[in-house]
Image (cartoon, rainbow over all chains, first blue to last red; front, side, top):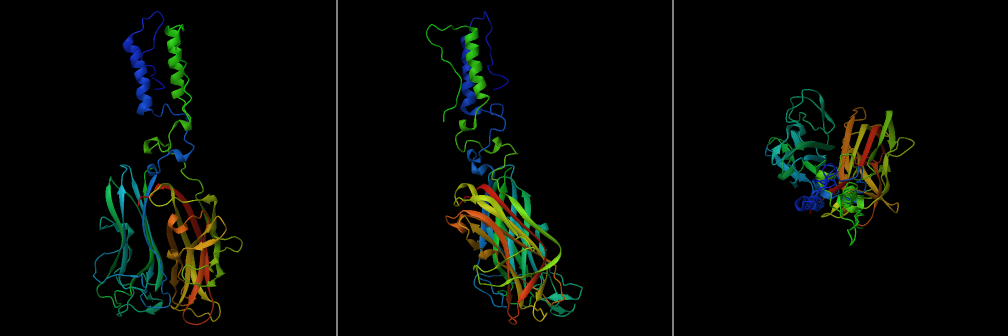
Length: 218
Length: 232
C-alpha cells in the first residue's frame, strides 16, 4: 500500500467521484483486512519472537530410550534393542513427523550406545523405510588387517575376523539433512547384522538411544 | 494495544474539499506504513512474514577445547545410572560447559515456542589409561554424558546420554570421536529452567580396582535453544 495508496488521488477542482472515493476507502479496508504486506511493516519491526507462531520456524519430533546399561559384560539389560540376525534392516527407533511447509529441510540426529562388538553390524537412518546411503555406519565386510574385535587382536581369516564397529562399547551418531515435500514421514534408526554372526541376537544391539527430527522452515 | 492510526474524522461544518480528504487519507496511509510491533496480535506473523535475519531465541553457542596435545583427565568412578558424581571434562583451567546467559524455561510438548534445546557433544578420546598398572583391556571403560543445571544451581545428569567406550590395550590408542546428541525438553526438566549444560566423564573397571583416566585431545559442546512447534 505504501506505493499505491490511494489508488485514485483527488485533484483540485475535481468533482469527487463516488466510485473513486469508495475505492480509496475499500483499498484501505482490503489491506488492513488481511493484505497488509512487507511495505506496510516498519523495517526491523519484528523484534519480539512472541509475535511469531512457533510453527513458523521449526517443528520437532523425537524418540528416546534411556536405561542403565551393562558396561560390565555381555549380558542384555532390559531396554537393550537386540538386533535380529536377519541380514536385513531392522527398526531400532522410529518417529513420525508431519511436514507442513513446502520449503522444509528435515534435519535428523541420531545418537546411540552400540553394545557388544557385533560382527557385520551396520546402522543407518531411514525415511519411509528407505535407508539413506550416506548415513550408513559400520560394515559387513571383514577387515584385511590385523586389528581388534572387542579390543582383542585377531587375525584375518579366523572365525572371529573383524568387522566394524569393533568396540565392545562404542558411542555412535549419525545425522542427515534432507529436503522433503509436504507429507507425513516415518524416520527411523535402523540396524542390520549378518545372519552368520556368532553372538546371540539379544547380545548385539543398542542401549540408550535418541532419535531427533527437526523440520527447518527457515 | 490499539494501533495509533492518524485519522481526523470529518465533522459538521468542516471543509470537504480535495485537500481535506487527501490529507486524511495520507494520514491513514502513513500510519499503516509504519505499524509498530504491538499492532500485531500474538502469533499473527507466520512463515512468510519473518525476515531471515530474525534470531528466534538467543543463547545458542558453544564451548570448544583444543588442547593441542592429549591431556590425561582423572575421572571419577561411574556413580550409577543418572546419578550425580561424574567428573566435568576440564582443560586444566575451565570446564567444557556452556552458559545460555539466562534461565530458559521450556514449554511442554503440544506447545509452540521455546520447546527444546538441541545439545551436540563431541569429544576426541585418544586412549584410556589404567593409572595403576598400565594394563588396559576390554573390561575397562570410560563413560561420557551430558548434564544440565537448573536455575537453582543444581546439576542434573541425563541418563539417556550415557555412553561407554572400551579399548583393547594400553598401547592401542583408539583416537575415537565420542558423539552424543540430545534434545532436552520440558519432560526432562519438569518446572525447572535450564541455565547451563556441561560434559562429564567417569570410568567403569570390571577387571580390577585400579582407577582409570582418559586422554582427551579436543572437546566441543554446542547448545541451541529451539523456538519450535513440538506437537504431541
